[in-house]
Image (tube, rainbow, N blue to C red; front, side, top):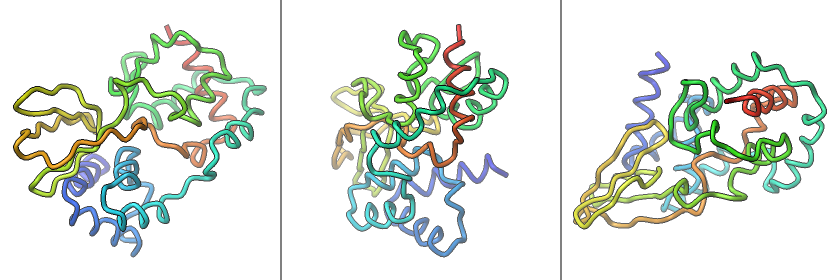
Amino acid sequence: TPLIRSEVLNVLTTRSDWLMKLVDAIEDKQVSRADLSAGIRQLMITHSDKEMRTRAKELLPTSSADRLQVVKAYQPALKLNGDLARGKRVFQSVCIACHKLDGVGVDLGPNLASVTDRRPGSLLSGILDPNASVESKYGSYLASAKDGRSVLGILISENGANITIKDQANQEHVILRSELVSLTNTGRSLMPDGLETSLTQQNLADVIAYVAAAK
C-alpha cells in the first residue's frame, strides 16, 4: 500500500548504503521516481556523498536550473481563473507533506493560514522558487551519525546531550551528540525545486486561489 511503501522508503534513507541500493533500484526501474517524497529527493540531491549527489541529480532532474526563468514561464497562470475546490485537491495531493491548511496536512513548513503576503504573484514565486527566501527556522539540516544514518529535516531542538530533527514524514529523530558526525545547514527549504514538473498552469492557478482564500 502507499503508506507501507512510504514507510519502507523512509527507512531506506536512514543509512547511506541502503540509500545507494535505493538509487540502484530506481535506475533499474524497480522503484518509481514518483514514489519518492519531496524530502527523500532533497536528501538524495544534497547528500554528503558525492557519488550519491551526482547520481541523484541525474535521476531527479528539475525542468530548469534557473528558477527565475521558471517563474517567468508560469506567469500566464496568474491570468487564469482559479477554482477553490480544484485548488484544495491540488493542495492535498502536493502540499500536505509539509503544510497544513483547513485542518489538513502537516505543520512542518510555514503555516499558510498565517501568511501575510497572499498576492498571487508572491504565492507563485514561493511555490516555484522555494529557496529564494527561507526563514531560518524552516531551513533544512543534514545530520550524519556514526552508525551510518543520514537524516534531513528541520532542527526542532538541541541541547548539550542531543539534537532532534523532524523529517518530511513528520517523524522525529533524536541523535546523541556523542554519535553525531556532522550537522550541516543546507541553506535550503525542505520544499523542493521542480514542482512545476507535476503541475499545469491551471493547477497552479487553482492552488494559488485556494491558499489566497484561506482563513
